Image 1 (spheres, rainbow, N blue to C red):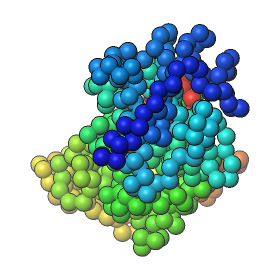
Image 2 (cartoon, helix red, strand yellow):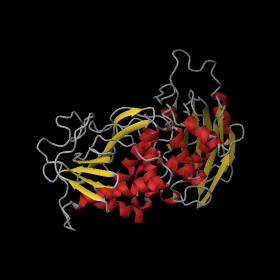
Image 3 (cartoon, rainbow, N blue to C red):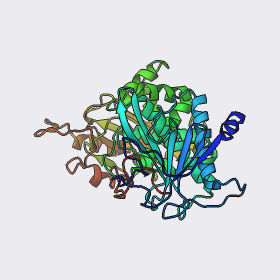
Length: 470
């Protein structure tokens, strides 16, 4: 902290319009950007070490003008700059590379533009240009947070600064990143920077609501993808299970690949494991998140929301649903009077993992399937979870059916679901992206998909990687 304060002490204030650059910036006259300063607004700059904040005192983009220390600089501007400086120092102490330097904002500093984002976002990292070494760019940061609902301006500035700065760090490693990896690791980074901010806690519900969506499935376009932000939970799992260095290594290894799962497989190999093994363990942790159970799991798991299951009843007969790669399918059912519950997978079982969890009067048990079959004993009156996991890195979805109930019910189900002679006959299905499956029985037999939507409807103003209003 002493070093951070020393850097903040090296301040300068420049009046007048910022220097023009080859790339349009929010203070470039007539710039065709989503958010810009208005014509006639006097834009000033304030520097704190490597950070330069661009702001105005009057007009629609004006910052709060309170100046408690009477040094001529609005306190809000100083606060914003100090948060970026502190976050930068923290990430560098974690071993991450600094954002690439540029001179587009008038100097080599990292530029932050304080603008009114109209409640559609609270911050954004924008790229100017990229080459094989990475990208250069700047941050846009909400100018006053009026109406945003943050508990304080300090919390708002601290969350946005740490999140958007991490996007700038990501850009130093690779010219392209998927939205899940980009937003998930940035939200994870904010939590690591300051776990008291609770930004992570508010985000992970969007991920736990869509467990059937492949982990590396990105949403293109101007949308609010709550799954992408909430995927920070997966990176938190990597940190808690293997160490934060694994996430750091993954950021370095990503290299702009279409999917981050391939590089992750290499990173996990250095830890003596594989993505498949880690993914199954992650799904187990997610099962017990939000419960009071002991044993393996997240350090703060009881405070997390629960994963969203398919609410079903017994006997369960679900014919050939799609089990997507790097995803899981959770079913929750009341056992009723059944003392023993049997569950079986039928069909394409290669690579799929089935396990069950039981909750009853404070007791929690997990039972693994053997060759696609498991038995839960002493189940009467319990809540039972059945979980089907596809830990593949990629590839088409598996079409395994599932039967569950007592032994007689499962035998009847097994007889009814004889393996089909043809699977996916006709036009091939691109299973790299989840699709509705009216022929697969997923909705009708199991009571519909989880409540979260795979492709969330976003606000038209929000650009890719733009942080959403809380």
